[in-house]
Amino acid sequence: MVQSILSMVLPIVLSTQPIAGTVSKIEVLNAEPISLSISVDAGTPAPNIEKTPLSSRQIVLRDTCMEFGYDEDACWKNLEAMIIKESQGKARAVGDGGRSHGFYQIQLRMHGVSKVCSQDLQCSSRWTLANLERNGYKENPFYAIKRHNGDGPMATRYANHVLKMASAIGE
Image (cartoon, rainbow, N blue to C red; front, top):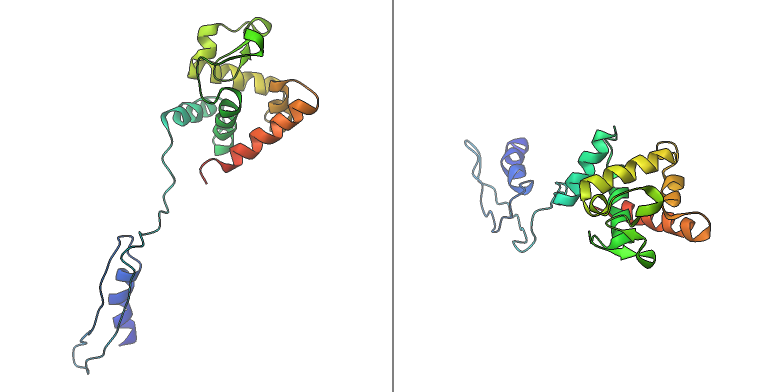
């Protein structure tokens, strides 16, 4: 009998839809009626167990990573964190006295990248990931991200900050 009652009550309790109210009496055929009270806070939404949907920018980053053979989330999250750190997500950002442009603040002359590419999310993400790979991204993402920013203590702080931001994305 208890198992029968639980089979009726558990689907209600485990429902992902918010519910309200009290069950005051459950009658079991061929048995004495019993009282059972279930109280549910109607103001508490059901837990969201689904992942937060990716933004359109994150989808481009994920797809770029997949083109390069990276299936895990770490790749696109690292790129997203680099964009936030470098340009605050602004395609037309300019820094380093006018030498660095775009999402990833690519030094155009030094790297032979066009301004148009630096400001195009897909083009600049492909260039950046290829550059990270030239600096050993597959074996040591920290070092490759550091090299994107240069060398020395400032670049080390940059890489630490990027990786910390990347680990917080989607939490």
